[in-house]
Length: 254
Ligand code: NAD
Image (cartoon, rainbow, N blue to C red):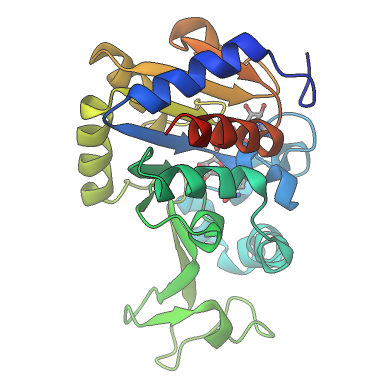
């Protein structure tokens, strides 16, 4: 079975569960944006095949050599984000929210594609590349206001900007962590789309939901370790075709 040949029985089971649910939430990861041209971290074509995360993605690495991290990892990410458009995977989730079958998306992504697809309640668990802040004076700036011809981009105060994302080694913003945990414990269905669920503490959220009795529906072309531990329904395939079909199946049931 692949992205074009989905298991019909499992698809219908997933659609039934979402249609009947009172509180569905989604947890998304880098995989949902692969079809928008943004590479994930792990696996085939992942950024860690090119970059060593310890050298580029930790807060210590950034503070040690911000010019290097900006020049290599951050500019590559920004260039990918500028070209990216939401696809039917992001739109499928927005369709579920529009018909009242999905309340909240907790995303580990920093690309803003859920909001651009029309989703309204999105928790950006790992922050965002849409905004930046000065390390010295805390002034905020949007991507378009950054002076990217000089790296790291300078602030008027003489400081430098960093993205409002969470580097490895940094804390998740407490309000995002708290709300995500509460939602995970309250939901009755959790859709887990395009994440290897290996980055803590986001990886705990499906476990929290499962322990509270939720049905876990997972969408991924590979079988990540999560599948064996907590998923009740595994929809094998790419986020685009699977979410498009799932949204249609749920729409037919309301
Ligand atoms: P990950 O790189 O660890 O795993 C990606 C997962 O997506 C894998 O399980 C893979 O099998 C799956 N996948 C690949 N192609 C897919 C597709 N077409 N449809 C559905 N699934 C697909 O990513 P992660 O688990 O999200 O966690 C790592 C971190 O990556 C997060 O902290 C996130 O902040 C960061 N990240 C974000 C972006 C982004 O914003 N788009 C991009 C790269 C990394």
